[in-house]
Image (cartoon, rainbow, N blue to C red; front, top):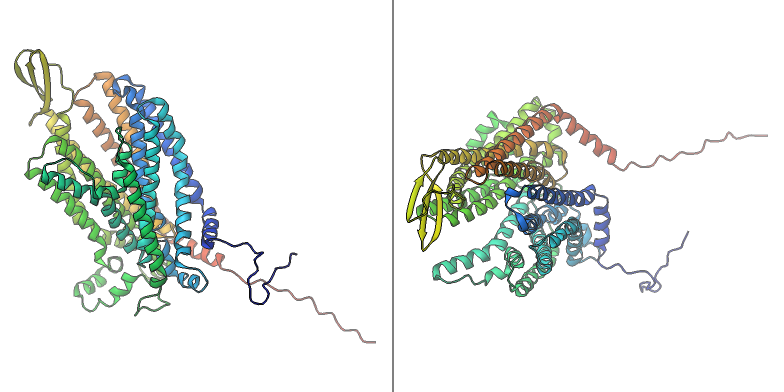
Length: 611
C-alpha cells in the first residue's frame, strides 16, 4: 500500500495534485452512472434520423412539391426542434438542482468546507452542459447531410449551431439562477419558465410593437439579447449582425452566473419559522395554517380528503390562467381589428407555442403529488387508511380538474377560433382549379372555393378563398372542432400518464419530462409523418387542390385521438391495478439501499486446557 504524504509544519503538500472546481468531478461521476446520460444521446440521434428519413420518403412523391428545397426544409425542422429542446433544458436539468440540495439539507454541508459559491454553481453548470451537448452532437452528422442536398450554406450551418449552443447556455443559466433563490420545486419550474419566456420573447415583442406604432421597419435593439432572435438571424440567407447579438447574450449569461455564485452562499439557509427537520413541501406547510380560516376547505376535507390534500396552494395554476388570458385576448384582438390572412397564419404558430406552456404546466402538476408523497412517505400512510386505491387516484384527478378546467376550456376555445381563421387564411394561398375564363375579371363559385380570375395586359392572376356555406367551409369547422377536441384529449392523456410516471419517478422534473416526451413529443413525429404521407398520396392521386389540406388534418386528428385514448386506457389500468405494488416496491427498495453495518464474526473461543 502507498503511504499518504502529509504536510509538515502546517504547510500544504505541494506534491499533491490540485483539483480545480472539485464539484465538477463529483457531478461528472454521478452523471456518468445515470442511464439518462446514455439514452438521451440515443433518443436524439434516433429522432433526427427518423425525421430526416421521413422527409426523404415524402420527397420520393414528386407531387409533394419539395424538389430542391428538401434540404432547407429538413434543416429548418430539425434545428427548430433543437432550439425548443435547448431552451427547455434548463427546466429539466438545472431548475431544481440547487433547490433540491437545499431541501435535502446537503448544501449547508458543502459550505462547511472550503468550497465557494462559484465551485457549486459551475460544477452544476459544467455537468448539465456536457449532458445536453451529447444529444446535440448526436444530431450534428444528420444535419450535416443537408449541406450536400442544397439549400443550406456552410455559414448558415455553423451560425445555427453556435446559436443553439447559446440558447442552451441561456436556459441552463436561467435555471441555476432561479434554483439558487428558491426552495420549492414547482415554484422553481414556473419561475424559470416565465424568465425564459421574457428573455426569449420580450425583446422581439417590444421591437415589433415599436415598429408598428412608428410605422417604420423592424430595428433590433432589445432583440439583440434574445436567443430566439439570434437563432432566427443565424438561419437567414443575408449576412445578419449576429456578432453583437451573440456578445450581448453571453454577457447576460455570465453576469447571471456571477450573480448566482454571489447569492448562493447567502440564500442557502432555511427561512425563519421553518423547522429544519420538516420535510413537507412549503405550500403544504403554509396551507396547514389556513385550514381554520377557510370554511370551504373544511367542507372539502370532509367530502373529498384526497382532493383537499392535492389542491393546496391554488396559486399553482396561475401560469395556466396567464396562458388562457394571452390566447383569449390575442384572438379577440385579431378578430376585432379584422386581421388579414398572413397575421392569422403567423398567429397559429405563436398560439401553438403558447399552448405548449399549458402542456408543460399540466405535465408538471400531474405527477408532482405522487413524487413528493412517495418521497416523504405520505403514500404509504394513505395506503394504511381505509381509502381504496381508486379513491386516491380519482381524488388526485378531481384536484387537477379543479385547477385546470376553466383555463383549459378558454384555451381550447381561443385555439379553435384561431385554427378556423387560419384555415380560411391558408386557403387563400391554395392553388385553385384552373378557371375557364381568361379575359377580363370572372368569379366562379365552385363546391369547394371562390375562384377569382383577373387578366391585365395579358397576365392572368387567380385567387381562391373560402366560400361560406360550401363543403370546404363545413370541413374547416369540423377540423377546427377536431383540433379543440384533440387538445382536450392530449391534456387528459397527460394527466393519466403523468400520475403513473410520477409514481415511478424520483423527482418532479424527471416525471414532467417523461410525461411530455412520451405523450406529446415522440408521438408528434409519427403523427406528422403519417399525416403528411397521407397528404402526399392524395396529391399524387388527385393533384393539388383544397382537399389535400383536409386529408392531412383529418388524418392527424384521428391518429392523435387514437394515441390519447391508448395512453388513458393503459395508464388507468396500471394505476388501479399496480398502485399498491409500485409504492411498496419503492419502500422496499429504500430499505435495501440503506447502508447496513458489517457483521463482525468473532473467532470461536478455544477451551482452556489445564495440565
